[in-house]
Length: 122
Image 1 (cartoon, rainbow, N blue to C red):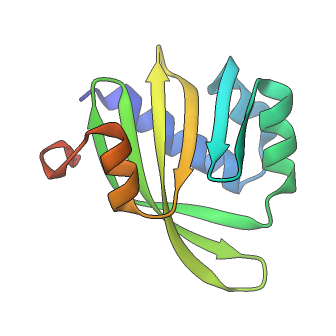
Image 2 (image 1 turned 180 degrees about the vertical axis):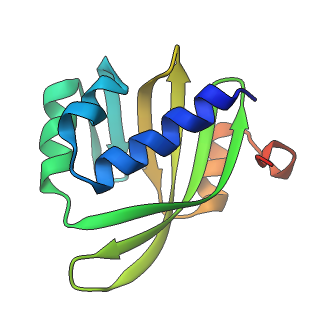
C-alpha cells in the first residue's frame, strides 16, 4: 500500500462531494474509465458529465488498498436525505485515478478486485 493511492482516492471523493470539477479532473487520468452496472464511459468529458449529474454525496468508509487498486466502502446520501450503501473500485497510477467502477456492495467490489480483509488500510 502507498499513502499516495489512499490520499488520491480520498481527495477524489472530496472533490466529487464539493462539486469541484477542476480538482476532480486533475486527480483523474485523461482516459479515465467510469462504470457501474448500467454501463461505462471514458474520458474527462464523461467524468465531468457524470459528476455534474449526481444528486448525492458519496462518503468513504473502510478502504482496502493493494498494488494500485483501492476499494472504498461508501455511504450514499441523496439530496432528499435517503441513504444507501455501495462500494467503488479504483485503479490509481502515478497519483491519478485511471478507473472507477461502482459496485452494489463491498463484497462485490472486493470480489471483482481480488482484495480481502488483509488489504484493509490501517
